[in-house]
Length: 148
Image 1 (cartoon, helix red, strand yellow):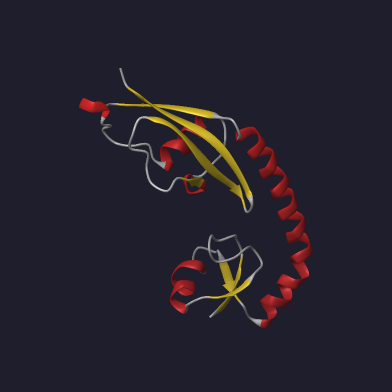
Image 2 (tube, rainbow, N blue to C red):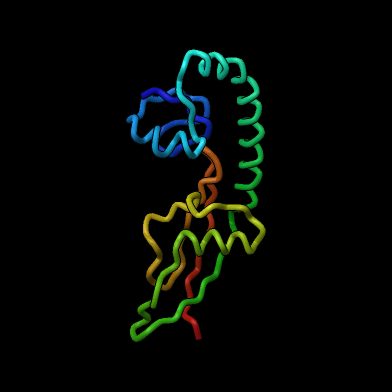
């Protein structure tokens, strides 16, 4: 089934792209969530007409994302976790924790933007990437320390 994306979707495409997906994925997820519309002739013509305004909107979002990435670079988040013997952590630091820590510093970052392969389960200092926009990535430092 062909659809037109209304939003950027990881591993699928960018806003305004016409992509081929399985009918169930479109019908059960993309269309109800308003992430895409069906690729009918009328919708394709409408997208062509508004493509210029979409390009302008994307450019302003790109500029804002670059500004936010510049502010995010060099940010350090500190977390304390309880530990047992041999400094084994109880629990972990997840992408949700990182997003909440950034929200406390007045950065609006969704946990899905935090690129953490797996939760941090050991004490130490870790570099974490934040995908702010399509090709804009910021790098922050996360320090996990022992709770006293």
